[in-house]
Image 1 (spheres, protein in one colour):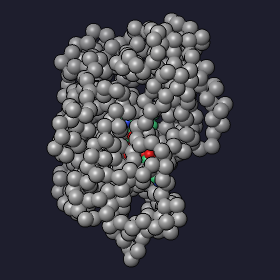
Image 2: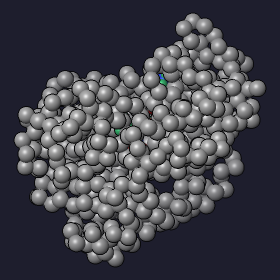
Image 3: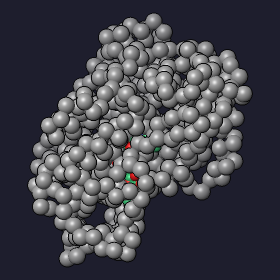
Length: 488
Ligand code: FAD
């Protein structure tokens, strides 16, 4: 039986461990934290429960297929519901728009709020679907770095060069071409943040992202997002995977050009294969410090990070839903501040996620659990204490103004996550949420492969490698990496 070590119990590490156990490997997962999930974890305080990281759940079949792979009925272990609405959007001019959760309702609903025809919206969404279906199998479901993928992606390259996929324009330009109403352009520009990029720089091909939400749907796991982590860890254990929590790996051992184990607490543990779910930057810098570093890849621009206030809020806010967005009055300046000035804009876009809308037990009676997230730059040594105090006041003012309530006396509990703590808790370089940024048209090709080209038997999964960050892509990375590892 082949011995395989997985470094890190993030979502991709857990999914990989399941796939490897199913392939007949003996799998040991070493996780630095004393809990699983990495970014997909939980915060509990004063009777409130918040999902610490991801709040938007799309493509649930990528989770349930892991149960099916192991011959189990997913419904017995992991349940989720389709949410009837996608998101509630607020603008400073008083516009409040509820984006329906069903594709057939969206075009007419947008036409009734914005200066746009239903036909125009319909055409945009059809194009988004086409882009997703065309590029998904090539970019997301296989390695871009193997010879056998060349034929399919050379066809795609030709298509991209024809301009049909919007690779030569930015997402913002693509949206401006379709819509004249600035609010609608902003709504569709926002999808750049789903991979931590700027709509003014990320290529127009990203206009496929709305298809996931508007074409396929948004979902909410019963028990909250953390139920994804919990149910998959339980599944992995049923497959015989051994988890070792509170165990920070110090080195990947390499002998004769081949990964042969790890160093942990001064002790060598041998293995036939090593799969790193740790951020690829940290893997090279800390665990492979004596090996040649793929410098060009490691120097790539990172995705944005976030500042999150987990607020326990007293009261009931019926106009708010599971997902809510309060837009900045100047989106362009917000992204310039983020990526060029490495700071947080004075009027930031605020995302408020309230899981207690779906999961009553997440907040005490008469309260709601608000996850209040603002796009933030990575940690470049800014004075975060000053920045956090400034942004807290600006966010409270903005939400109070736009909702017509005074939030000042209503916040009864607060926890905070910022780029520094995101990095210290997950080893994500600079606190990036999604690995490298997609701020260039070639970003998809420049991510690190799911295997090492120099060191045999060393593989990579997770948000910092191909195909990128976010739960669905991390799950794809697990499938791609483990497919390359021989049967156990
Ligand atoms: P990570 O979660 O990065 O975990 C890596 C693990 O490796 C950690 O547990 C870490 O402790 C461990 N590790 C690191 N070094 C070592 C070592 N030396 N030894 C042992 N263990 C080690 N995605 C979505 O799909 N939807 C969303 O709505 C969404 N929102 C987000 C909001 C926030 C605030 C954040 C932070 C992320 C969000 N994301 C979202 C992105 C998503 O969370 C990530 O892309 C994904 O969870 C990353 O998973 P991963 O497998 O790369 O591992």
